[in-house]
Length: 366
Image 1 (cartoon, helix red, strand yellow):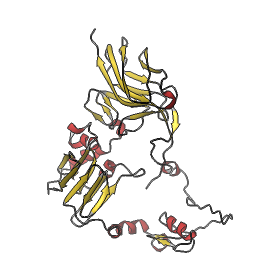
Image 2 (spheres, rainbow, N blue to C red):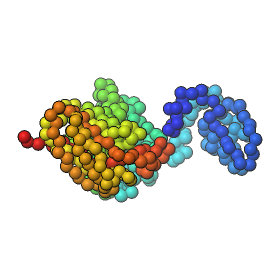
Image 3 (cartoon, helix red, strand yellow):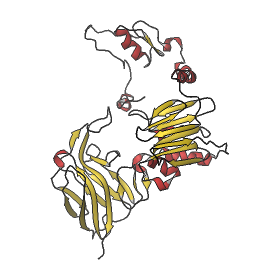
Image 4 (cartoon, helix red, strand yellow):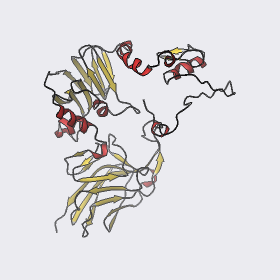
């Protein structure tokens, strides 16, 4: 599981990555023993006066690492995977399941898991793959499935809509998708507080072209996703088809998205075609911290209007003329604030300015 420093550390000569600062023993000591990251927990447990083993980990102070016993520890660990999964007493089958929208949970075969969740379902076992701050998004994990692997994927509808249900591209409700990446897939909208479903995997002919297309689509990064809509909806990933690219905007949240000056000093939305000669810009948004009640420049080409927002969401209409056929909208938050509010654990602080719910371009007559 990668943390946020991984991409930087991996560029360096990665030696002596595990160290312990002990208040009771200030002296320095280096232990040049063969070990792996599974040994970290056992080593700390040993220091605290507990056992010197934990799962597959062994204390580097008083035990012998599995990496010393098995030279091919990676292959060994993968071979042990089914046995390790059995230790957690995961279900061996999944035929019927229940989704509780109030608790954001799925239940089947006597087990309960928090949503969102991806499951690999075979004849002999069910492998749950949850989503966390440091794991890859579920769609990227699904992209690693083999063409014939059976899956059940429970997530927000818009995340799977671009593949198999475009009519749900703007829905933040729960949906259930199941099937095989190289075969057939179905998407079901969870439309009840307590929703019951059944697995229905069909033994179909595998289409490798379909499989490749599904994998390629699953791997599209959020900012490159496009959906059909007459406005920019900020609580789903991507942008309308009319948008070429955008920058300075943070990830989607349940209500919308913040501007983030760590990603760009300005919110910049570039459209594929010039904006209308005359149009209204309808902005539904709020301000963060000291950006509230202050003039916020909004530019299209050489024309600039002023937007004033409060800490609560409001809708404002700005009137623009665009004689130069400009294709880019620019919003400049006056005082982005560095904060961890609403941030993902372990990520760098964001610099928030305005929170955008929706932006719509409405052409004016004349």
